[in-house]
Image (cartoon, rainbow, N blue to C red; front, side, top):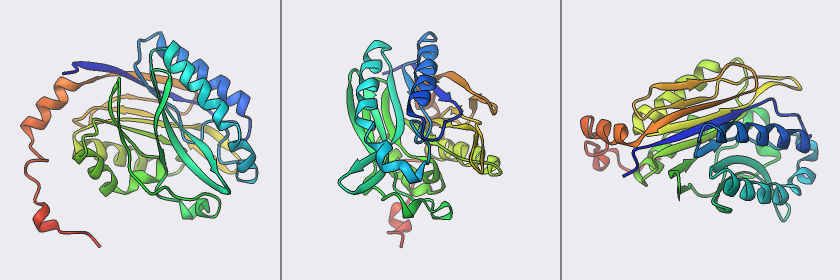
Length: 263
């Protein structure tokens, strides 16, 4: 049984459409986390370019090159790296979360819920599957930003064995308290760790508050960022998670035969 793992997030101001500048910020943050022996690091949503909708198809063509870089870094830094990038398949664009582990992209997850309030559904297509992936850092559940508002997604992954929920985001002001409350709720109700990486700074008309967090399986905020570029690191204790699950038996006490299939 794993005893503990050092997890981290990289929070930075994503420069809209500027892939090289964003790669520089992300890699520098990952290298600083590596000096703290971090084994799992989460980058923000669409970290290579932001939501540069007008140029997104062109920017997505750089994603294979970026994935090669992440594969190399995951080997060099001995770190599982998780981050969301634009993906182009044929004429379809996705917001895709990739997991790099020991030199390979071991799995990916396409964002399921499109944030129609901001027109995301006009430019991107939703995925069609959930993803729990075994890695050298543990069993990761994958979700992106707006997915956080759909608790049934997280419960499904918890029942499939997810231990750490990785959530990249571009979550803007003024919804800071929704972000903080929902992240803690997902950890508490599913008794699993949460590593959430938000971006910070201003992009066009949007002001991002940062507030990236690392949360224990008990719902305790182990580390929380402010509104500027930074990295966070904290220890996730598997022993504590297992102990807590044995004390409050949420999974064993479920009554799925009563809930039925939700409409």
